[in-house]
Image (tube, rainbow, N blue to C red):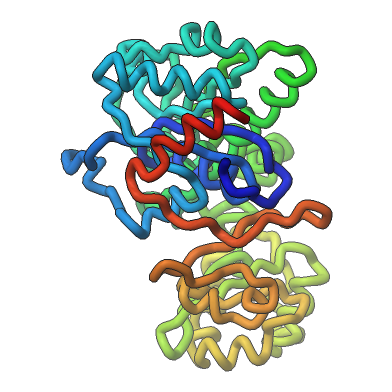
Length: 373
């Protein structure tokens, strides 16, 4: 039998059809929290196109999972997956709409084999709509949903963020919530369902706070004119040593503390922090001021105060920061820097990140364990 896993999702069985992007991240999140996640992989790595991103033994998204390798283009491979479907709580797939149907693994077929199954579909554009069958990536999805709009300075093209807003935030996290909600419902009713998780949907949903600010008149369509994308007190700055710091003194009491720490409490130019007309000049003033000292000097003055300050750190620097080190946010396993499981649970804490399996390592064990479990 499979080894006993720790965490609040221990006992949950999740079948993941291997892919790239948010689907594997969602599977990793479930595995981190104790679920038995089995990833169905190709017999051999596909080195063409995007699948050239195969990361081998540092594919962190596969940590804690078990691997079954099959050929989904053969009846035997499809039958193997359907046998696993009979015993799992949820399935995760991230193919373009129609691919799973062509493979013989459509939702209706899988739900016939397991009526309690929650079938999670992860895409960028969604299962229907004019763009449903078009190729795309994180950047395209958040560009269309509106989530990219404020990521830039006035008159400049929006910055290309790392694939966190779309793939992870608007994709994997919404898929995880959808699967958990579906599983709870299936346990109460005995009936499974399909979860259509689209990054355009999730990243648009994440805009709720900004849209509320827009409706109240505090967020304008023009970049650089709103509370969270233009003020001098909510920005990043280069220091004398070339490193960067961030300030986010949104509320008046935090802004007062920042002014006091910077010796600007008597400077009348900073008396109207919410006047957009003053922001360009005050950003330049802040830029000049923060460029006068090193990041370490600013940390010594501002870190840990109510000025809402933090240094901008690389992942390796973050892992060694005293606060993140005290909380054990990162670990180094298998030759790679890894984040530890999150969030944290008092009664059912998750274990350490699991090992990354070899392709097809658990073919026999998974079929035996799930059939007998």
